[in-house]
Amino acid sequence: MKDFNLDKLTRENVKGLSPYSSARDEYVSDGAEMVFLDANENPYQNGVNRYPDPQQRSLKSILANQKGIASENLLLGNGSDEVLDLIYRAFCEPKEDNIITLPPTYGMYKVLSGINNVENKEVLLTTDFEPNVDEILAVANKNSKILFLCSPNNPTGNSFAAEKMHQLLKDFKGLVVVDEAYIDFSAQKSWVSQLDKYPNLIVTQTLSKAYGLAGIRLGICIASKEIISVLNKIKPPYNVNELTQQRAKERVLDIESVKREVSDIMTEKDCLSKVLLQVNYVEKVYASDANFILAKVDDATKRYNQLLEKGIVIRNRTTQPLCKNTLRFTVGTAEENSKLINALNQINN
Ligand SMILES: *Cc1c(COP(=O)(O)O)cnc(C)c1O
Image (cartoon, rainbow, N blue to C red; front, side, top):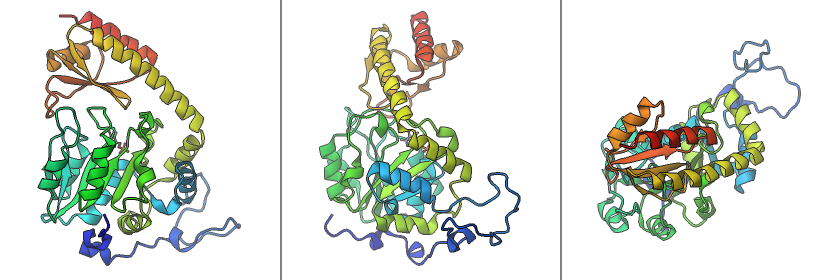
């Protein structure tokens, strides 16, 4: 990545933009008691009558501190889905550029390529669910702006081999987005530690999974200051609301509770994996680095419907490439998992 040039990857119209300057951007409080008559807000205090901080400074400083990076390496969004959309819009010219995804993987990359009218070049994972490096590099052309690597991958649950990811980060000419939605469940190290080495690396994380805050929508983008500045130009000013900023701060500061829950989920996952292996219509249980388990069964649609009748909702992944007759089980509480196990044992034929 010696000849990396961010300018060449950025859309022409985006290069010319400067970020929208809102009232809350133009005057930043230094903590002094000021009279705020600049944003046409209702002055009567109710906790959320003021616009939120468009740059989420205090939440970012907590996150930056925890991740050992600078706030300038962070952009926050309304879920990582918004962060991913911003990446498309900053770098992909509709009808001209393309992105590369590696099915079976997270469905939003394809949805967003449709919405943004950007071609999605699909290169299947190998049968052991690893990136096919040679084929990816062969399919890439000068308009390939983004390669999405979901690691740990959804729905397969594995982390990609580090050596393959290094090779792709080195040889792919566009940006490489490593989606780490499940990194907190993984023994693997985050790719955030490689930001200095790879100027084309963008890591996305979320508070939706391990942090237990899917309902507040807080997505995290970690990249070079240069990439973050480009994304900041197109970010809606108040994309992360005040309630979300507050709840996210509380939870991120209470990292011990998060770790405790993650550790309980991992214990439950190991237990559930062992039980699944003993169910006679389960043919294979894939190793998982996440908080879900992919398993191959005799007839996924039949088993899915049987579980549904017993009031248990899992994900049928049988239509995904390389995933014929697979089911994805999210790890629940001990109580939920034992309900699942009971149901699995009752539907034996
Ligand atoms: C769940 C998930 C996300 C989370 O998206 P949010 O918008 O942050 O809730 C992102 N990527 C993958 C691969 C996921 O499975």
